Every structure is written in C-alpha cells, then in structure tokens.
Length: 360
Image: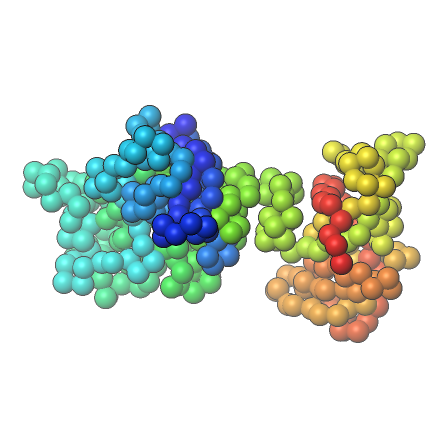
C-alpha cells in the first residue's frame, strides 16, 4: 500500500486521562486511490489529516508513505512537514491576491528553470481547465475556479500525496457536488493519491474510492461507499450514512432459512441473514433504509405520513405504523399524499442489517 496508517493515536495535552482526538485509527490507500474521511464535527477527521501532514505528533502508531516511515510513536520518528512531499488544499484556498492565476500555480515550483516552470504551470492550467484565465487575478474568478487554482498549485510540485481539508465547505451545495466530481477527474487524470476530509456525504460518495467514517476519535469503518451503505459495520455508521431507522425485530428459523419478523411483516430469502442464535432469543434491531420501503396501495400494511420532504423526483416520507414504530420511504413525487394520510407500504429488503437490541 502507498499510504498506511497503523493504529494512529493523536492526543492534545499531556494531562493524565486526556481524551484522544484520534484513537487507534488504521487505514490504507493504494497508489492513485482517493480516500475520504467523514464524520460529525469534532470526530477527529482533521486531526488525523494533520497527523499525516506532519503537523501533529503521534501519541501512538505509525504512518508510512511509499515505504518510508513518516511518523512512528514507538521509536520517536517524526519527519517534519516540509520533507514529506505532501501537498495541501485548505478550506480558504489561501491564494495570493497580488499574483495572477499562473503565478499562484507557479509559486511552489519557483526553483525550476524558467522553461520547465512555465511548462509545468501550463500543464496544470490545462489539467484544471483554466488556461483562458492564466493572467487573471484570483478575485476575478468564481469560487469554483479559485478552488481549481488552489488544487493546481498544490499539484504543481508533484507531491507524493495530496491532502484536502473540507475544500468545498464555503461553496453552495450544487457547486460543491459538481466540483467534487471535477476534482475526482483531475486527481485520477494526474494519478495523484489523495486523502480528503469532508462532513458532506454526497461529496464523499462523489470523490472517494474508499471512505472512512469517524466517531469520537475512532475510525468505525474504512470501505467503499456501497459497503458503507449496505453493510455498515457499526450502529453509528448505519445511522450516519443515508436515511433509515432501526426497528425491533426477531430472527427465527424457517423452512427455507432464517426469517426476520418485523412490524412490517416477515423478511425472508435474505442473503447473509444472521442465524437466530446471533442474538438472545433472536431479538435484535433491523436497519430499514428509506429505499427498503415501497409504497404499495395493495399492501395490507398501512402507515400514516408524519412528515414529507420534497426532493424533486421523490418525497422522503417519515411514516408511523399502527404499532407506533416509524420507518422512512422514498416515494415518487407524483404520489403526492398529504401529511396525516394512511398509505400502504411493504418491505423490499435485499440486505438485512441487524444490531443488538438497544435498551429503551
């Protein structure tokens, strides 16, 4: 692996009992892969990124890039940031207002001979699609264009690893998603290995080959987006990624294999369904995503609409069953039912995800 973090721990303050900002996080990226760290504010994702950059010393674990140990808390190794050959892109772009776009990009390669420097700047301008804006000042560009200049400047010195700390947080939602896809294309075209921090799931899914969900300093899961969504490793990941609820259920033995009894009826013929003995008396909580619930007027199971959120092509409905349990559902927006109305629903679950019953 090109980038390897092994049981990395970052701790602020020396007092006994100080909580670790990052606690035993491990992840790996192959050359050319893009990793994304996601999680709520204060979960430790930026601290982990800063430790890779060399801006934070490790209290435990080690960091290896391309076979070279950058940090190792056990033997006291800590290479300074300037010798790690790492590029960084920040939230505020940090462009020089008095320099042109081309001069901003060329700032980090000023040591090159003039001809090589000019060629590298032009290569980066072409890569990010800003050749037409080479002589403009940063303030003459849109926010998205400024972000691409910051990316080009970070890539110009050919870093062995690029780190991006919430680079789109100041942009509007539509621009963030579009720019995230553009940045992924630029990084893939340049073959750059990158580690990206965001709090936005759509950004994470648009950019990342692998995504890590952090929670109170722990890296709960490091996986591709599909696995995070359909096979969450922890209850926190299941709650944090996507829309869904936990519903009380019981796993029982049926003739054709394990079945799951839920307030919506029986879930059967499920791949990788846990055996009944996985939980005491088979009692568990099953995760039901909004896309696991289908609106079906012919279904005998009815639910009352408590809330609805218009999403253009669909509504996201929050529904209450007669049992009092709640589920969520994506419903095509031409099915415009009113809040308070009872509609028919049925489960359509391909991936059964269960966790231990949470105490009430």
